[in-house]
Amino acid sequence: MGLIGWLIIGALAGVIAGNLMKGGGFGLIGDIVVGIIGAVIGGFIVGLFNPDFNMNGTQWWVSLPVAILGAIILIWLARLVMPGRRI
Image (cartoon, rainbow, N blue to C red; front, side):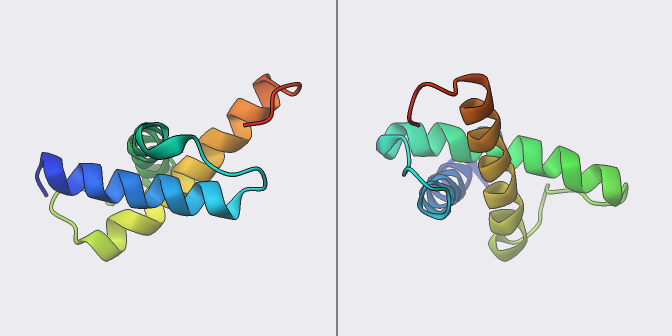
């Protein structure tokens, strides 16, 4: 998957995670950033449970749920660190 593919997956993951989490997302650019960082976090976490897991060369239907999981974790951590702000 190329850079444009990762941006699309990141945008989708960020938007979906923002909609699943109470309070909404971060806007288009923020959702893309959250989704891409979430993909890294999700890939790391899934890799802990399955050391053979590798997101390189996987299809979008594998990458998207992993990115959504990571984006949800990232939003949750951001809200934990900044409890007074609504994110």
